Image 1: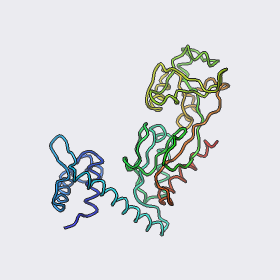
Image 2: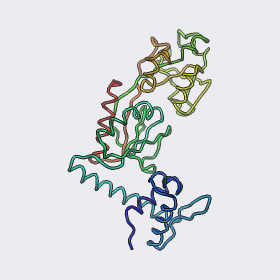
Image 3: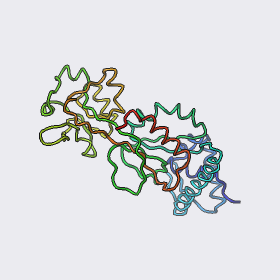
Image 4: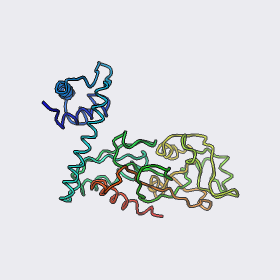
Length: 298
């Protein structure tokens, strides 16, 4: 007997999820059913794909080869389905989107209900990662990246841009005072990033230029973590408008040193590998999110 596409999907899902139980939860089957499918697939192929113990599982050499080929086959099947659907002008299929946690939480998630109403046949997978990922390795269709893009073989589409604000909570400013010059920041607790030094260059004009390199007194890898610290009165942070607009409107965070802000706006880009005509489901999402980000347009 030959392997079926559903068996390939379950095998790939197990490897990507890291365990049978996690894969079973994702696809809505019992772990025992998933395990039986794997055993049936191995029997059909007359080879062991995964060495399984009670504590871990490892791909055999045959399993590694089969995994890579299975992903290609499933992607080709998705593309075929997509092309057939495009003739009917009905976007469908799985769409995997990756973005940093703050952007996903504040600029994507609030619009997902509307997107699903518009495109009910698109199956969304939303993944968050504050580090740059390999799109192919992570089986990602679109990655949304904030800031200037490095040279790359990836194709990019500009979605908009977002101003940066220097922010602190009213409680922090009441206790420590409000800085009135850039130099006065030296007397305050500054919240910055642990990685990517450019994120600690704040858009502030001073005699030597229009970017001010800070030395964080408290650092974190995620902008959302820094936002929460600022809301709790732990210091002054430099954060993007897309994640703090409601905080500013409600007064939970206050803009400081606004007269010195150089006006720099962070570019927001979607990157992807396809260099031919975009799949309809990808095109629909890019058009949709670009429209939502129009309020940040430069």
